[in-house]
Image (spheres, rainbow, N blue to C red):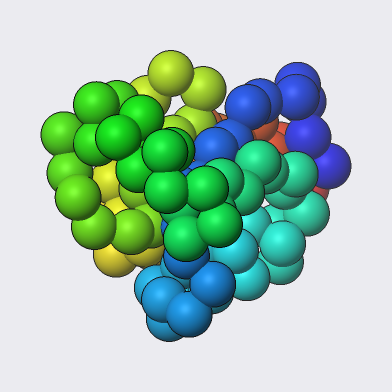
Length: 92
C-alpha cells in the first residue's frame, strides 16, 4: 500500500537483463512506472544522458532523484531505503 503517488521513470532497452530486473522489482512492489525505451526512441538517449550523466541502461529516477542503475536500486532495497523513496508504507 502506498502513502502517496510518486513518479518513477526508467530509461531502458528491451534486451538488457538489468532493465528487466528493475522492471520486475518495481512490479513486485506494485509500483507504477514510466518505461522510456531508448531502443525504440533513440532521441530519448540524449535526454537520459543529460539527466543522469551516464550512458548505460537502466537509468532510474524516483521523483527528481537519480537513483542510478539496477544495482543501485537493489542496494537501496536491501538497506530498507527503497520503499520510503517509493512512498510504500511499512507493513504492520
